[in-house]
Length: 188
Image 1 (cartoon, helix red, strand yellow):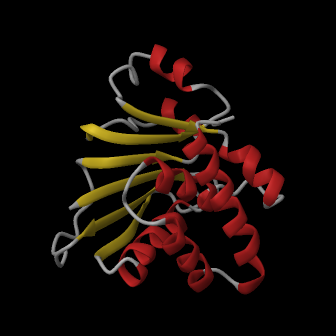
Image 2: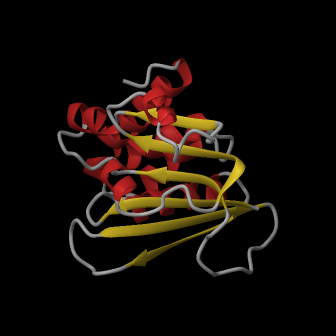
């Protein structure tokens, strides 16, 4: 089973990204998946968590994800507020939205041991393509490129199904832009 934790702030779209990943994995990827949120104070800007599980067998565990194969941070200011690395497996992947470089993060003792670290300026991509700082589909594209969790075309199909029609094209473009940048190693 693959377990994923999304760190965001209310309004970032962390839970939407978790749902998109689960939808892509299950409906279009033929696997079993679940997605669920964990909210503290329910207000815009408050820290929130989203969780996704993906497996080839039915998933019976509905508890919070604590041991992660992948951790995604949609807002880098959360790094100073919560332990985003907590529970990341030794061979796990971390994807962070930041204008900083991977090297800058690896100088920080909290990230020096993260073998699979991807840093992408998702906010810049979102502002350019979506004209909004909501980074959920951008970060989903980065995660798809950095891991083997799902196929990018399945993520596009999930966007088409879950998002309102007027948002599907720009969000698919944002997903692909991030996917291509991570695949080509051009993170900023």
